[in-house]
Length: 175
Image 1 (cartoon, one colour):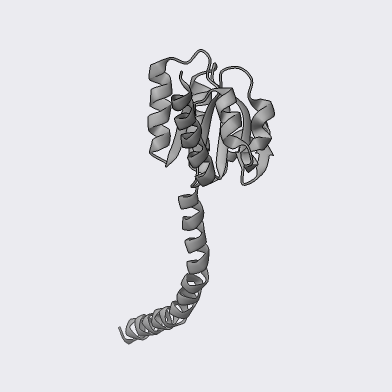
Image 2: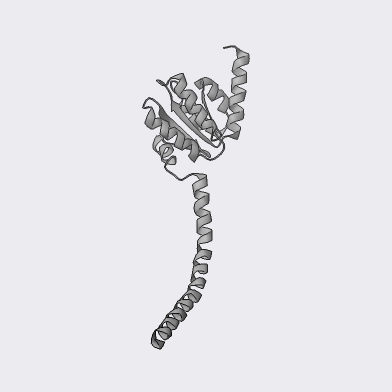
């Protein structure tokens, strides 16, 4: 690889790191090209990027950024997952692939300035996603109004039932 190509790779990685808020370093040794491509395609669907990075090029690209904290975890073949959106969706996809392929491993994670352990990174996949949280929030916001509406509807409903019972009672006595 010539110097010009390396500089292009470093600048590409640097631009990705500037946008990213979430990263996961993985060991991919043993995965086939097809499996990595499948993982990449699924991650692209949630606005994430997964690429194999030479350790030295990543270290150069991340100098002076908060991702510099990950340098100690770069040993052996390493691929990095980068996301600037919701960290939960890519975590869920990665967790699915971890179950499917035992050769894939997590080395470390990184979320908004903090290095995450392997366990913490895996725990992200168990959290509800952004859409699920928004649905719960809407449900919580609507719940008091629905209860109030039901309470207000209860009084007239009971009145109608009482009047119907009185009417049946009177019509039954007349016969």
